[in-house]
Length: 257
Image (tube, helix red, strand yellow):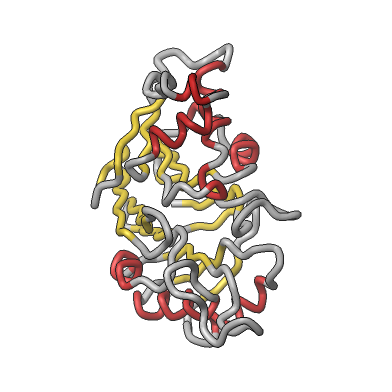
């Protein structure tokens, strides 16, 4: 299994990276986790979008899903679609069909008539689903909207993606024993504004490390670091509490699982 980072900038695109989006290659299956601002262009550097087998969204904040509208245009209006191209499975929070229709429609009147089910098969998240021979497991996490951590399993290997979350026992349980935890680290644990991060929003570098240690994962990959914080400082926080390998991912980076 291989992870390709399409974008990893927290809260929006940064000068060196699109927002959040990740391509997972597992056997013959190609799965994208999130499609934030700028990630659809990056995807095309690594994969013909027609080869996607599914898209899974951790949640529906724009920095994790805004480029879905570009995927809609590609699948609806590409002049040369491959023969037999069917509807693409989209695994997402329950509001996804309405939210994506609203983002795609040019005005309120057309929004009421916009139906994207000609090109996409929307499915609300379940505890476990299969995409080919890949198993995708989910757990609800702690964020200001419906949000999930995602676990991808294939061939005895496992990758867990935190999505966006504050401290979460559900994330620890989902990540237990995983080979790789791809975890957000959005801010420092201590700043001039707080002595501990606000609950229910994001993880600090230290908290990401604590989750990795509690889950007993093999390797911790940090993501979602905004451009206004130093990602290396967040990694140092994680290393102080997690004995395994810690690295900060980079846009267009490739990581074996």
